[in-house]
Image 1 (cartoon, rainbow, N blue to C red):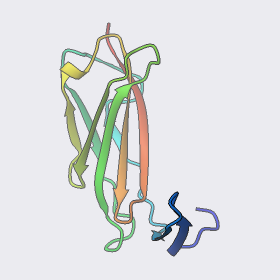
Image 2 (cartoon, rainbow, N blue to C red):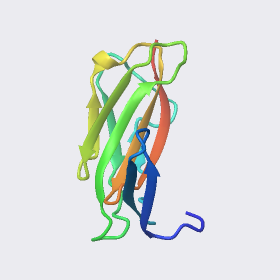
Image 3 (cartoon, helix red, strand yellow):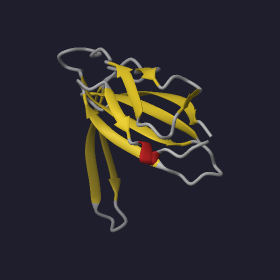
Length: 136
């Protein structure tokens, strides 16, 4: 994180109505390792008539007990500007490693990407993104 120091940072400002705003944010340097995706693999071609199984390995807690993995966010979406944007998004428990995307979500002959984000206690997140496509 460069020269950033962990700790509490106080912010202040003014709202449009001139009222004073203040807040405190905690910065940690506890970053989870990026998730490792088992399926689909990069550039896989999958059958759009079958549920897509997204499977990943558990991410180790960065600094237990202060910093542990709290959840995973999984996003599967079209990755073709000419196609209608379709997004499947779900937040999973820290103990989960698999989610099924219904075949009804998938269109034939379409490019997609799947992204998995691991989030730790203070909100720090790391992600992996993998492209795949469906068969014609």
